Length: 252
Image 1 (cartoon, one colour):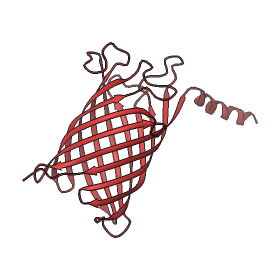
Image 2 (cartoon, rainbow, N blue to C red; image 1 turned 45 degrees about the vertical axis):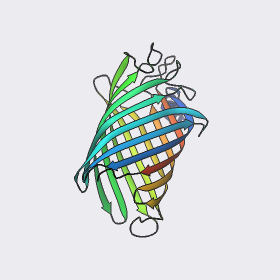
Image 3 (cartoon, rainbow, N blue to C red; image 1 turned 180 degrees about the vertical axis):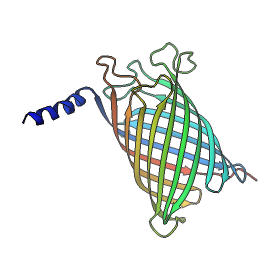
Image 4 (spheres, rainbow, N blue to C red; image 1 turned 135 degrees about the vertical axis):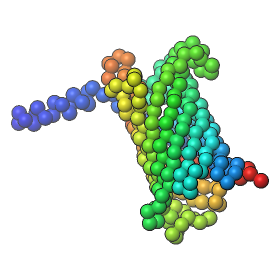
């Protein structure tokens, strides 16, 4: 009995010393890789991220970049992201209101096949400039920016459901897992940033036009602890991701 009580104490303390925030999310995504040449593409992307599935804002994300196909399986990319985060949940990052974020990113993608499974590994580096929440003029052209660095690794899987490959007018299974880690001299106890897991089905209308619907799970640790208790804050966000992919050929 004594051993059981002692074993229960660390678990109870661990629960007390962390704040959990649960949200329902719905992410609506458009993205496209537009061909400029045999190896060069322009990437465009816009995401509307909502809480309450659709009722309230979580984030708005606009991304643009370029990609270069070095080898048939190897692609390099980079670009710029502008993100706006709105206060949401029971423990919002910023009680003061909406704040912006600017990012520069570089990534490398490696594609592979394992039987009928199509695999894509992607490693992305991000240099983040986050407008300090509540700072005067922080939304737009603020001079008050917090610098952070992050590395991301994603493994994406695609499986045809109606044959050995995905053809026009066919369904496929799609899934991914992506982990985000902070790094830099200011990172101590908050190395883990977030993890995203999604799985669902997709439909290919044409070679350049696809729609996917996935169940989405996001676990996110806030960069700063709760100001009142100094406990770390973790978000557990569950919902869906609806994505439309449409590619154009811009080369002659």
